Length: 196
Image (tube, rainbow, N blue to C red; front, side, top):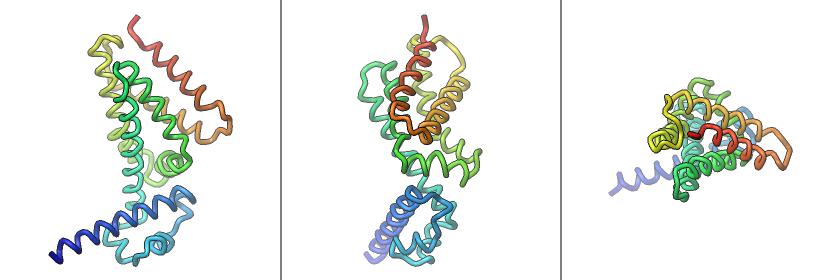
């Protein structure tokens, strides 16, 4: 019984650390947040932090994984609400771009992610999350004859890269029309891929 209570307390401490560090990273950026600020906001000791995470970078990685998972779930929910595979793709892509307009998501996923973890690790995490789902959606469209038969990996990389670049651009532009115009441009690009 005591070990169950300790396990629950450890899990609650981990959730608190993730919640508070996510809030701080989103508000200030990774570089501006110190470990002492995280432990103070979390109400734990540095020892408790180090029990769960070996370093600030590891804590950030866990936060980024959480954020990527939530964005992926938003995209999947939006796409799955659509009845046909083509609309699922376009709706999912638009949902990704919309999610990336949240400044908290931008800071963690698009700005700090590549710089803190390095381009290769960030790209691998992106590949494991959103790019994998995009590839599956594209393969389903190829299998249904909606897209011409072609290798799915290069197409996935091209579209994933285009959407990541668009999301980065949306993070920096003050233009209020940027998101709808970007979604329109993406839809035109996607439509050009369809089987004639």
